[in-house]
Image (cartoon, rainbow, N blue to C red; front, side, top):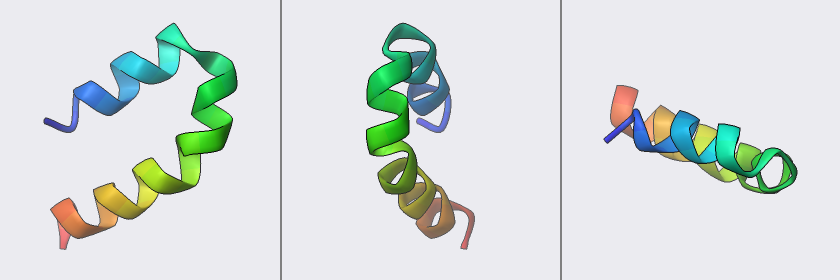
Length: 32
C-alpha cells in the first residue's frame, strides 16, 4: 500500500505538494 503513494507522486508532481501532507499523515499511521 505504501508504494501507491510514491507512484502517484511521480505521476502528479503538483498534486504531490498538495497531498504531500496527507500522504505523510497516512504514512505516520501505517508506520505507527
